[in-house]
Image 1: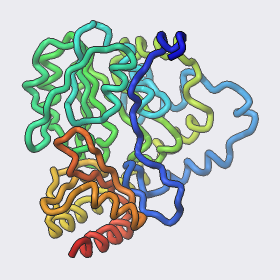
Image 2: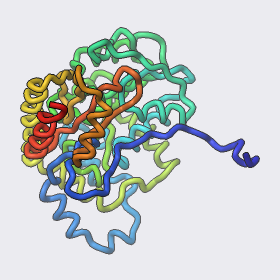
Image 3: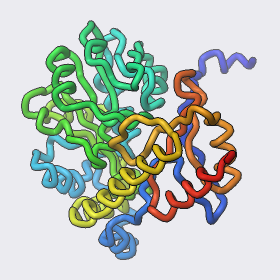
Amino acid sequence: MAGWEDNIRKVTPYVPGEQPKEKNIIKLNTNENPYPPAPGVLKALKEMEGDLLRRYPDPAATELVEAIAGYYGILPGQVFVGVGSDDVLAMAFLTCFNSGKPILFPDITYSFYDVWAQLFGIPYEVQPLSGDFKILTGDYKKENGGIVFPNPNAPTGRLMPLEEIEEILSCNLNVVVIVDEAYIDFGGISALPLLKKYDNLLIAQTFSKSRSMAGGRIGYLLGNERLIRYINDCKYSFNSYTMNQTSIAMGVKAIEDKAYFLECTKKIIDTREWAKEEFSKLGFVFADSMSNFLFVTHPRHDAEELFLALKKEGIFVRHFSKPERIKNYLRITVGRRDEMEQLFAFLKNYKS
């Protein structure tokens, strides 16, 4: 090994879901929204002036920040935006988890958490989910350097009641607690009301799922003004211009169209509930997901074999080989009704 490599930071990176190049497939592997973004989003894209693209964007993304703040009824100073929830979560890790004590998160959860911890040199301890994939609040009442968990959790889809989130917050007033709400719009109750009571709470959300803008890369944090100011200070010390002009303009239009947002999320929720019934008829077992995906297993079918069989058929789902507890599960995004019907048509004939 060359001498210069001795001082290179070496990490095991996050592995994103496959983005197949084939056409005419059913893509249910990355939790994207199957419906197009709000009409105003595409209109904003078409009307984008070339002059805006030659100039640096507003580093504060003021127009988007104000639109998000207005939507939630909070102050603009309580909103931080970035390039997808991955960007804002990474900035939150960098800013908030510096005590030297281990941060806590579930053992089965979003697999980027341990990557950021390793990248930033943050010690961490994973807390095992229960046998039925619940987060156990008692595991988060010990000394720690911060806490992060998704609600609903990923990849399980299980929702934690608001009172349990408050239980964790009330026992951890001296550290920052991040609730990652990437999937909250598909049936859960946001922790937003708790912001008035807990100044150590950060809520992460995204436009990628419920607002059909995964390609636009917009994520945001909601918190108290002082905490958001600290995160902005780190952001401006890292990259002042994270949000591009196009995403800012499209994001404003997306959040303004509440009727379209509710229409699309309702379609996904309705399809999810119907899909639960269909999976049950076929003998699949799963937790009661409140997200836009289902985490399923079958007592008689090997998950990896089924994953490969579906892929061969042009139906892409997600299989996790680690940790061992979930290697026989598949995470299946809720697509359009016609896409899900094709999935079930295949499953009904699989090894019949």
